[in-house]
Image (cartoon, rainbow, N blue to C red; front, side, top):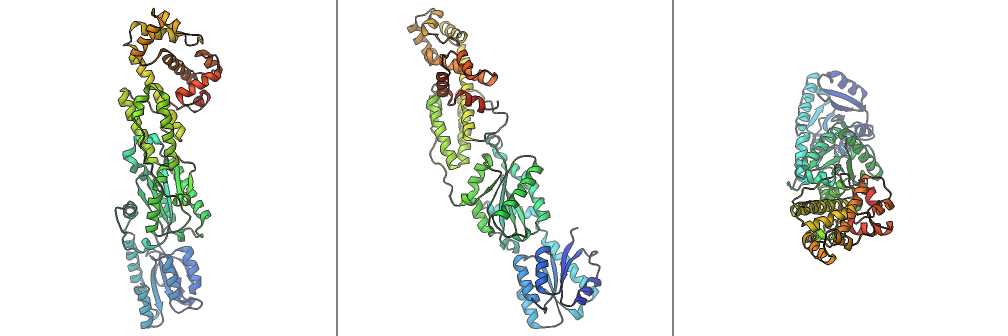
Length: 504
């Protein structure tokens, strides 16, 4: 059982010694952590040791007991106080009551039995105060920060000022999609790591969890340093490092370099929550200062993405992907994580519904930037086109089938013409053009370009050929022209595509 730290204060050294010897403090669950002969020295000890019980004289030099206790109560309102005095003064008793002190003992009445009875009463009171467990505190605070509760219980520590630190596991976009309904599990995992650290080392502080965000409310008295950007940043780094080591996964953290009331902390949380969501998926640093976010209120993007372009753009890459890139840029500039997620989720559903084809996800379940999301959908587009071509291929007429096979066998021929392809299919070039467009929805040249770019992508992903060699193998005389066509079809230059391709 946790011992109760106790500070004894009296200007008479013999009184302190008598108090020490009257009872077996350790047996009763108390530990005398310090003694002082005046209020000023006692205040210094109380600040360092943070005792739960203080037994103090009233009349003392330098700083009397009342001034000492009034100062202590401002910083440590939960500290239990017992006044001892040589005078049965009504004025003293009245002032003690005004300070919330219920125990007032005359020195000449103190006996072993009386002191033991008072200490047992103190132990019971402090034990009952602890009955509001971390879980209950977490529940009350979580409801408060979620605006499910308008007020907190009328308890002293809820009226103090705190440093607010926020933590989240790194939730990449794909992981967020797969586990959208289970965000609280991520927050709970992190809370179960951070809460014991706070409880063990920061006795006047507490923690809460709201969905995936863990909120630490750190009492400045627990860090023994002035509250400033440097001290709070170091504190946040310390918690972030410990959490990351214990969770064995990336942890993102945020801090505000000030101390505030819980009501202000709740307002702060609601103000920066959209940014916590965004940087929880797309972090630029592992520890971030929230000051800049509080100065620029979040404005969600109201512009809707033209989803109809996907259906219209299945045969026109540029039409769809130019709009996609512009819209992604708009969402990332606004740091609108919810809209990014909805765009990502809706596009995947629409692609699968349009093609009746399941999309293969990156094995890393991770997108760290706008470009990686864009690349993923470009890759999906290629997957779908290949799937569509494969399914359509079986229903093509013999001439179209023959023409396609001829193109596949002669992709590297940079002089390949529609006349040669038509001759292989035993049709005139004009007749093949009409039939090909009717069955495939594309011109012969567009289909040939798609085959070449598809083969180029395969070579970029599965070989070490240089770009100019791939250009030659796919029927382009100039690597520069090949890069231009590749960019038009995929939105990326070949070298950039090879370096940044999604891990499938």
